[in-house]
Length: 277
Ligand code: DGL
Image (cartoon, rainbow, N blue to C red; front, side, top):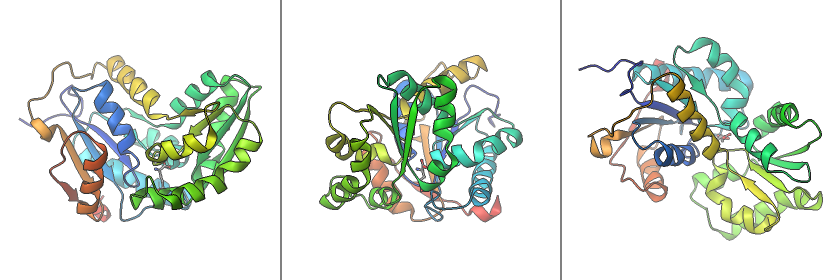
């Protein structure tokens, strides 16, 4: 039987430039365990953080077309850069409900801050869009939002240097100025960064609340599915087939990484040629 994208039983499509979006997948698996997920990591074209808005829109559009061809019932843009640069455009073009990670992260941070000073670490693309401060200002106008681009974090994570002296050294360089201005809340505004949360947390110290937008993203996704009557009420009987993984390159490397951070054994990651979409 062929699934339709408006069926409760259809999968959720999730994408990022690489492995970062798995931090969002992990949270979706935890909060709505009945859902099937199709994940796409654009490993051939990463990083997104240093690319132009037009390029991010083009890449994201191709990925959404691929996910729509898989009959997903909803799409999660599990990438802050694509949420910042492309979500507005995609919302106009895509037929299924689509949601990103920036708004949920901004909401959580606005609720968490006590002294009204929030730091955002993210890619160059996300920081230059100023999207976090725009959302936070709408929710809490007196807040000061200080952005810091951390472009080396993505390659460090993709190389698996999650706990490593090189990562500590670079994190110290990036984060010192945020410590000096006394923020009490720090948004991990790139889906790769929760994977080096322990390093970031040690440097920032106990007084700073780290916000991983993934939690609120999964919560809001659940609400969206409920509202659209698309929440899957029964557990699929597919075993590990409940979760499928696609990449644009280097499938084995992706699979190994995914298996190191997800608790479900991933049997395969398949390569998709994006130029078809
Ligand atoms: N993980 C992505 C983000 O949240 C993109 C990282 C990159 O490819 O630069 O922004």
